[in-house]
Length: 327
Image (cartoon, rainbow, N blue to C red; front, side, top):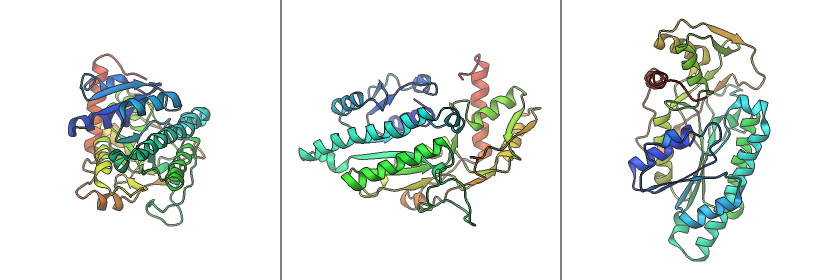
């Protein structure tokens, strides 16, 4: 029920005949309103549960007998991870371990009964390019061979979960797929994230905080482009392909450029204020997406930053006109 997960649910139900079982603990960033459009769909079922609850996960596998799992449940905000790292270890590391074990138990039982589901089952683990840390040594992009160098409790917890997924594939043969995504944004994103926070501050005429001089370089991917790539990965990659594969946007912007663009598009009088640069903040982060392009023929990030920002601004303006924003 978070930003990316709810978008996956809506896309899968709209673009396929798949049945979707959605598991979410509904913490602060899980928003059932993001799924109101599909709540009555007969192919949709919601389970309120924690992925770290082994009994609940086992019951979900046994009752619904899935063909695949897309693991999107994660604590994902860097600043929160610095203040409260324990929650990130619980969900991102222990939760991934529990989900892997219950998926392995389910898949092993399928194999023991010679079920055709065993051959096609896949555990798709959604990760982040933040596990790679900072571009250095003259590299222009992160590739799938870039060594891990996480720089925050959040990225360290995601790196740990990635290693667990790969270990379960190598040790137990569990069919897995790992994708690493870049920064994403769009309507419905929780307001603590950079782009919605910047938009809401600009619409309110508040100062726009930027770490350091704002020269940190990032790629920003509109949610629709990300979801198309992620969902196609489930169908369009060979059964024995385990990844990793980067899904992102080749266009790169600095944080200061992003803030100035939001000011321009909103017509805001907001001023940029500069905050001390955290030690964990990478200066440059951008992924090479050649592998994803080659594997998903015809897939390409289509929505440019300006167009995506306009869509996102319009969404938050409409929400504010209805009386507020959920924080």
